[in-house]
Amino acid sequence: MAALENPGYLVSTEWLHDHLNDEGLRILDVTAMLTSDLTNLAKEKCYDQGHIPGSVLFDVGSGQGKLSRKDAALPWTWPTPDEFETTMAEFGISNHHRVVIVARTPREGIDSGTMWCTRTWWTLHHFGVECAILEGGLEKWEREARPLTTEPAGGFPTTRFSVNPAWQRGCASKQDVLKAIEARDTCLVDALPATSFDGTTGGYGPRKGHITGAINRPFRDLIDGETAAFKTPEELSDTLQDLLDVPRVMTYCGGAIAATVNAFALRLLGHPAVSVYDGSLMEWASDDSLPMTDPSQES
Image (cartoon, rainbow, N blue to C red):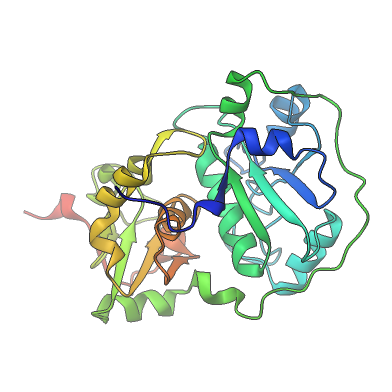
């Protein structure tokens, strides 16, 4: 029987219910409901309609969201250490707090709560926050008739946070990907649907298909529900088995959001060296000098 090497990266609804009043706990609701211009409507459409008591809306989904670098050309680019420390102070998170990340999926197939949870976890974890994801998300919480409130949370005392000096280990650059294409010890993984990988549907820039040398592991193959309902350890292991013995894995997608689902699942299973290409296809597909393969154009 397969088992998770890092089960503490997930928490159950029962655990969270029992610890709602812990002083050292912060609950971040990262629900995203994006417009075409990357404005997040989750506060009005979701959070204000009912949320877990004590949880605060933590807008990661907006193009210039809480975990995005403010001067970056692309949306969702990792923040600088100074920006990250400022955000943690704003939300009352110190190095001694534990964070639980929660979300819902407002529109199935569009606003996957899983990928916003894993994107948040991936960034917080590598910057040095002790954090976990609520398994099953707000949908499971509601099915179990656990408490919701419309009262906004917040007002936490301002704190200080010191980032992990090795924060960049989870974040890969364009140059890292170019090296990975040639490296025998690194596997490049495309987390998008097979139709994107093979170029039969539109891409994230002027070119379709995938980064040359990548393999395809669609992130939705790893979940049973849209919000952090991961498949069993056995199923995850079966889907990712060929990656577990690769010394290094690098994942990507369109904007480095869905790719964190694969990366998180690999860390659940204990893979020690996984990174996410921050620019992903939004950067790669726009640069004709970078190698890309479009199987739909091959005869």
